[in-house]
Image 1 (tube, rainbow, N blue to C red):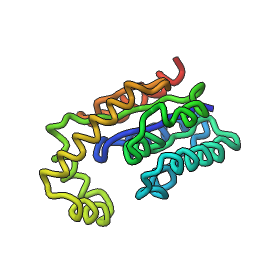
Image 2: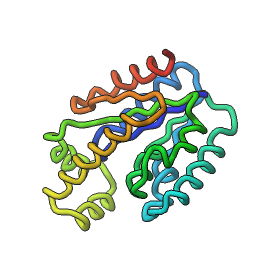
Image 3: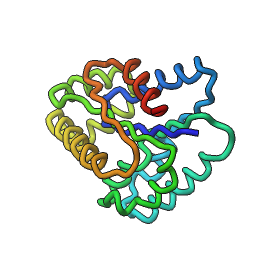
Image 4: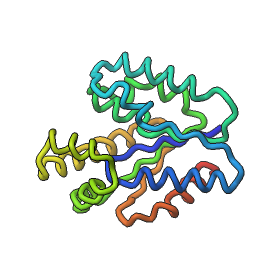
Length: 188
């Protein structure tokens, strides 16, 4: 079993990458199980206690590793928890240790000058609740700044992880090429 952890800022193309990965695995006759942020992040969206996050993630990973699967794709597994709880990679070492030998983190980044355009485009595709959430929290300039800052924090975290990792610039929407390279990298 191999695990792919997709970390990203909103609008970086994570959904498209995930679809491309699942399609490629299916074509190869592989069993792939995707665990979305509704399971990895949303249950603790307002949590700021790292111990609660670590315990939650350890239980989630334990449950996810049962059964016969060739691949598991986690959507935003633990980097956002680190940021939200004002923690470090070292604080989440127990989480990394559970999956270290068979995982790869994929960070999707976007050229900062494109973030605002991506947000406007995402508003057309996503559920209205996302746009309402964004509009309640920030004005247009603030949201662009927020996602640019999030991306910088994710880049800092990936530089410190002990897991195999790769950073992809998804600014050009070359999602199928990225998915192919992820699969190749998993098998290296």
